[in-house]
Length: 268
Image 1 (cartoon, rainbow, N blue to C red):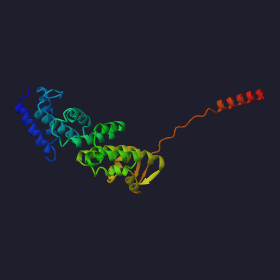
Image 2 (image 1 turned 135 degrees about the horizontal axis):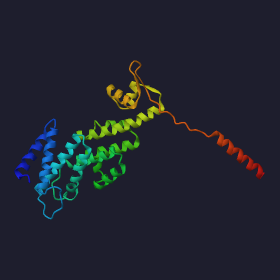
Image 3 (image 1 turned 90 degrees about the horizontal axis):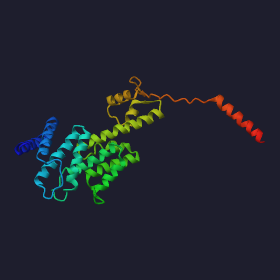
Image 4 (image 1 turned 120 degrees about the horizontal axis):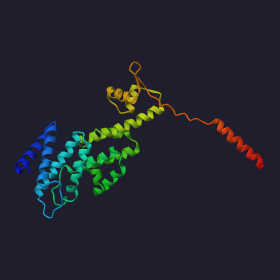
């Protein structure tokens, strides 16, 4: 079992590494792994409801898990975020009445909501939002919750330009990661429509439609889709999917029609 003094030292080191600018992601990952093993050894993880919990211990464990959740997003590891957020649910529900509020709770709740949008889990989004039991106006007043609520509405409206703008309006840097993930999906949907509607487009127009501000990114995207890029003429020619040809059995149809005609003659 990790000595309490070592756990305390690792915890303080984690806070310093996480608070550094830029965040020392590698150091945070190493410390989080050590701390989780230490907390398991000290029987502080997993968190189980007990009659008389040590509130100071719970606050420290919650803080470590919250840092782990943010570290996961900064490391672009969504499954890791899911695991940390799942462990935090006990603190945000079962112990919410006895623990002091965490300043990281609403940012993480909002990140979880926008994560559901990136996975197209709209029903889960609304179920989770309702489970927060916020006052009627709280969703609009709390920037961390209002952001994913607005993004979901714009997605349903097809207002993709507003979703793109949501990246700059993100209440925390971590939100941009999920908005970027949404934009990948949106770009692919728009690209499929362009392939159907146009034979070619000027590079500038294609960049505008696909929300690209960098020509290099547009060209890379076009190459991934199999489009032809003509830098001299400043155009993109879309790859047309070969149309499936339906083979019509003409002889069989003629034979059936003749048989049907003979039957009609016999009836008459």
